[in-house]
Length: 351
Ligand SMILES: C[S@@+](CC[C@H](N)C(=O)[O-])C[C@H]1O[C@@H](n2cnc3c(N)ncnc32)[C@H](O)[C@@H]1O
Image (cartoon, rainbow, N blue to C red):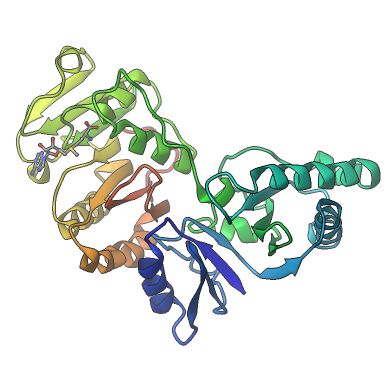
């Protein structure tokens, strides 16, 4: 079976996405935020699910009476199913009780399992990769999701499956990232951009050029400027005064949807408040015209009926992009984020 985690309240939207994706296979709600389907995960065309915060491919329901028993089960799958001599990652997390419940137990299970490896399979322990960077083709992933102290689901995704499924299997435990804060930023929109960077595994580089559409009051421009990038900010209203005074920022007052850069830029950033289909069309247009090498764009929803409007991104971005993701970020409210690298730029830096 395949399991999917989603944010609280997003279960019906993920259920709809799964029904559209796995035609004929039921999607069953097992617990708040946890769904299962028997449909086979496609790996030829990576699966894009905006409302799946994390996926556990080929999961098995298990029970174990003690921490030691859990660690032995993990040891048994790790030693039989992980490819030899290749990196692997380990996520153990609770999915029961109030916030934080089960966290200690997950930690003790991890320690007991690693101790077993230390005693009996040191080479596997050495191959354990604790990074949270995007998966590469040789990375495997073991996930244990505890649904109670003595029950849970164990998923082993041997390489290259995590990489193949990278649009719905994240390198973060339960697919979650803490929402960042910075009191010096003009607004909390700051957290969205920082999370998108983390999910892409990329940061703005010094001297890169960013177009920031719908930039006011300026948190996204603030992040890009802090990284040393140059910014063309477009909005109907000016940004915070100190940002407007920054020599690496150019402000253009006007309609974001009418703006076209004179030459391709490194990044399109867009957080405009607009109907979802307009933002979707804007991303596709910029990618088709190769106006940007990379993009991070917010799609704002107005009502539940809007979620299907993401489908053109899933359909068209695979042929336009080297890489992309479409997900509701932990820092998103009634929004989703689409971010990626446009195909056809090679490794050159543009602008
Ligand atoms: C959510 S705010 C952006 C926040 C910004 N990303 C930040 O980090 O501070 C949305 C912005 O989009 C702008 N906006 C909405 N429609 C626009 C349009 N058609 N052209 C330009 N700006 C627009 C609004 O003026 C508003 O400042």
